[in-house]
Length: 147
Image (cartoon, rainbow, N blue to C red; front, top):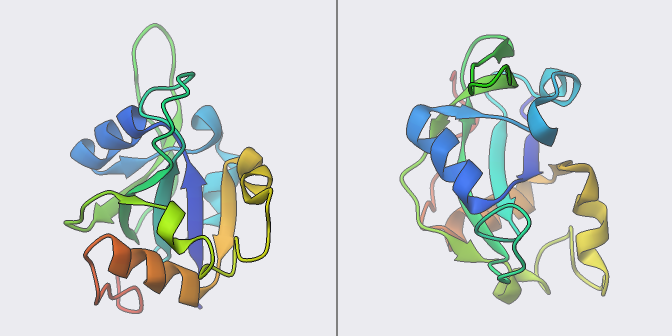
């Protein structure tokens, strides 16, 4: 069964992973990546452009489908070897979350909607995933086929 995930990272980190075809979550931890399976849909939400900045970006910054394979360790230098999964990223544009707040099941009616994102990985319903995909210019993302 296909599942859909929202993960949180700065846009700068997401852009690197997107350019190199991978995803990382929770500063490179393996356990959350083991919950995600090949074929699952994944979307990144970036509260800021750079980690630690408060620039108010609040946008979805990448969307795609997890490729076949298991989590593996990458080398970021200086001994940092975070766990990753390969992702087939869709051609898309970044989209603000603000116009979607009253339409996403994840956020509707929740004044403190960002609180639930503090864990860095949240399962989404298919409705929310498709709504975000459309906002990002990917109206027909196919997450039901083989990765």
